[in-house]
Length: 115
Image 1 (cartoon, rainbow, N blue to C red):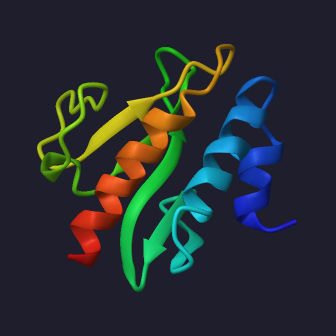
Image 2: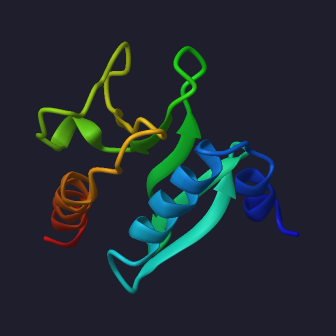
């Protein structure tokens, strides 16, 4: 099992299923997206550039997508917290995953990097 796979499969439900669904959405948003591991977490790259990561919020236990250039993305559900450049999209694992919302943010991310 690879390091990336162990990240997902070491988690308990419903967090594991939520992370796997988020991974699937990110990988399938563009044919050029490649998954790797950086800083011990799943990292998704467009070419050689890291564009987002998956992680789990320590306080809430919720999975989130961290967008590297989040300061350039505008969506009401993106949170910067104390970060200057990056923003996160928290996902409640026990609720229905907001697929359209995630796809909208991913599309904005792709537009940022491909235009």
